[in-house]
Each structure stands twice: as structure tokens, then as C-alpha cells.
Length: 111
Image (cartoon, rainbow, N blue to C red; front, side):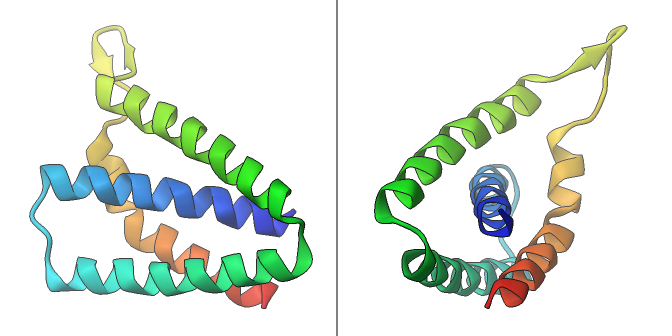
């Protein structure tokens, strides 16, 4: 179960990273952060291919890809309560370093 949670968070992170690249300027620290998560992703998929069936990994990867795209799109459009935004995409950009650290820790626990 931890594998699938980490896989979902990886898709969420990279979708946020893609939106961040379009809206903000990339710094070398952000590029390094993306590289660390990319290495963690490779290690996670290696673990997944060793312990789970290929069709399950591909199916859940596709489902997570779609769900994360819809989630981030809904935040970009805006979630408003009484005319004021509940939270914006900038809040999600601020949690990206914590999300990347969480992904690395979860991947380390799995390995």
C-alpha cells in the first residue's frame, strides 16, 4: 500500500512541477529537487517491478496520472467559498520541498 501512496505522490509532485515551470522561474535548487525526486521515482519503479505485476503498475500509474491532472486543474481553476479562494496553486508550490522530502523518505522505507 505504501508503494501506491508513494506512486500517487510522485505523479502529484511532477504535475505540480510542470505547472510550476510554466508559471514561475526555475532555479538551480528546484532543478536539483526535481532530479532527486526523479532518482527516487526510478528506484520506486524498480521496486514495483520486482514486487508487483506489470499490469497493476501500469494500470495504477494511468489512474493516478488522470486523477492528479484533474486535481491540479481544479485548483488552478479555483475553489472559492463566498467569493474568496480557499487555497491557490501558490500554496501548493510552497509545499513542494516538503513533498519531495516525503517522497524520498517513503521510497527509502520501501527499499
